[in-house]
Every structure is written in C-alpha cells, then in structure tokens.
Length: 482
Image 1 (cartoon, one colour):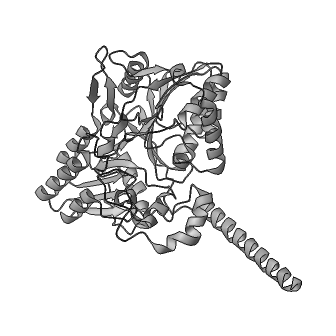
Image 2 (spheres, rainbow, N blue to C red; image 1 turned 90 degrees about the vertical axis):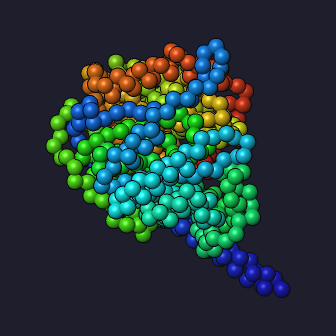
Image 3 (cartoon, rainbow, N blue to C red; image 1 turned 90 degrees about the horizontal axis):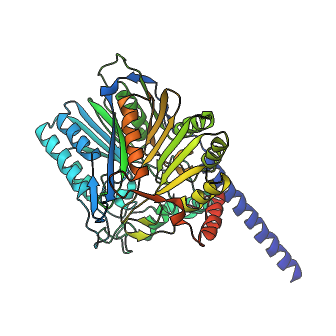
C-alpha cells in the first residue's frame, strides 16, 4: 500500500512539474514572442508648414457660476469634412465603434452618425475604396454582430476585425491559463450573460468574457484620406460621446506612413490591400512630424523625457499615467530643475460606473510626495464623462516637442502589447500648433473661462494608501485593466 501511495505521489508531482513547465513556457512565449512584421512602426521624419498641421480638441466642462455643462467638439466635425472631401479612398482604424451604453445615460449617437456619413459617401461614390479596421470588442469578442459595422458591410464598405492573437499578451498570469484551456472553445454562440459594455448591448457568452479578461486591443484611432490624416485619442462610441479628447490633423507624406502602419494590421487579420498614397512628396516647412506606433512611441517618449533639462518644461494632459519608467523619468526630470505640470483624469468613473481612482490617484500622490510638490498636478473636473487625452508637451528654448494620439502612459499601451498610434511633432515655439496647445493648456490650468480643473490636494484621502498598495501589486503582477 505504501509503495502504491509513493508512486501516486510521484505521478502527481510529475504532473505538477509538467503543468508548471507548460504554463511558464506559454507565458514566456506569448509575452516575448516576435511581433508581426510591420508592428511597432517608426515612420520617416517629414517637414510640413503651419497649414498642414492642426490641433483639434473636444472639451466637456462646467460653466462658471451656474455649473451648466458645456460641450466643445472639433474632432469628428473635421472627420465628417474629410469624408465629404475624399475622392480616392477612406481608411480608418478605430477601437470603439458602437452605440453601447447603460440605458439611463443620454448620449449622442456618434457611432450611428459616423456610419451614416460613410454609407452616404459610398452611395454617392460607389467605386471609392473604403476600409474600416476595428477591434473585436465591438462584437463583445464574438458574442454578436456589431450593428453599425454590419451596416457598413451591407453597403459595400470593407470592415476588418483585428486578429489580436498574434500580439503579445499583457496579462501573463491569466493569459497562460486562457491559452492553455479556454481559447480552443472559441467565442461564438448565443449570449446569455449581461453585457459588460452597456445595458443596451446584446448579451455575451461566458467564452467571450474569458477572452475579455485576456485584455488586449487594437486601441488605435486613425482616420485617413488622400487629403489628410487624423491621429486621435477619441472613438466614435456613444458612451464616449462627451469625453474630452485631442487629435492632430496632418497633411502630406505622413499620410503614406499611416497607410503603411495599417497594412500589417490588415494583413494579420486577413484584410485587403490598403491604398497607396500618391499625393505631394515635396517637403517644405519648419515643423517636423513623425508617425510612431506601439513601442516606438515608448522609446521616443523616454528619450525626450530623459533629455529635458533645467529651463525646459513638461506639460501633460493624460487619461492614464502608470508606467514605472515614465514615473521615474518625471521624478528625475523634476530633480534636474524641469518644470512639470500634469492635468489628469481622476479615474473616478467609466461610462457612468464608479471607479476607485486607479492608477492616477496613487501615481499623483507619489509624484507630489517624492518631489515635495515641485511636480504640479491638477485634476480635471469630470462628470459622467472622462478626461481622455494623451497629450505630452515639452517646451525647450525656441522649440517644442509634442506627442498626441491613442497612447496612454501605461505598460499595456507603451510596451508593444496594444496596437497604438501617435504623432510626434517638433515645432518652433512661435508656430501656430504650439501656440494652440499653449492656449489650450493654460485655459484648463487657470480655469480661464470655465470650471475645468481643481488642485491636486482636493482628491487626496485615507484610501490613497490602499490604492497605492493595489496599484503597485497590479503593476508587479501585470493584472490591470489599464
């Protein structure tokens, strides 16, 4: 009997060792596997004049005195203009393209409106090539069809749902289990569980929830025609309809770089060949622009933060600030005498649901404490909407460095996990683009003509210590939703 028990224990031990080995191997491979060709892209540096680059912003804020909500939007009006003016092609890569939200929320029909504009254009010019790339989140990971995207397909517009599988896994502890046991079952079937993305969305399958927990995305927000490209932080998503966001509109050869950066996404998702830009190639101007995606954004951001010196200033308007390398770089820059100002979303709500303040609350406390308040921080005054931009502005002697696009300052967004697109800009301090961003930032910082922001200390409380522990544990284990 003792011999049999000993053999059983040895077999159990061998099975455990085998499981751990396979689990660890699965984690390591899918965390560090080679990226598909063309992902993590760095375009050429191009030079444009002031007429070829514009800063666009959407702002939701409260009126002074009355507290009445005010909404200013310029991003999607520009995209609608681009649709009207296009004659050769329209290509977009958009993360959230749906009308899902909780039934009690009154939101603009941004998804339907964009779909209607694209369909109207296709009907007027049926031979125009129109391709929309999006994320499977819009089908709740295979639980149902994406209504507005389905309408586009029915009218002859090509829709590509991104195949996320070739991308690296950002939540390795869970992803290892998901890949070993759950991915083989697929996600299709009749949903029966409440949808995580809104009461008015179709129900989800448990298999779709299991893929959702694997958390990775094509998070890009690009829109391009032969006449220009928009690199944005906002989505045509009803529940995001009142979010504050930013975008750059840019013209010239960078249009070709946007198309080149999107072709690998189409390729790995069995999509079509994208158009080739055949517009102007002459480059005259004193403003440098460069398209960056995924980890190339990370590399350039770190390079510029580390290069900032005394007399320079760093200003950020940011939805998520969490990456440890970025946090440390800001602390070091402050010690070098760099002036740093941050406008952050308080991370207290998401589409009408309460959040506890991760990651910005503990990160803000850390930066303020470690620099003795030298890093100045203000919270954006959000309601049910979010302060959703991803803007970095580094002002040097005579010139400014700008980053804007889809990339939050988090590990998932920066470190070759999600698909992301940003535009890097280097412009004279007297250029219109720099003046526009200076005016925008100062307006929010000083509450010039509205109630935009509040001082950092108004958001500090006892629970910040608990949040700090959760944040550091999440960063260590890579178990985050941001």
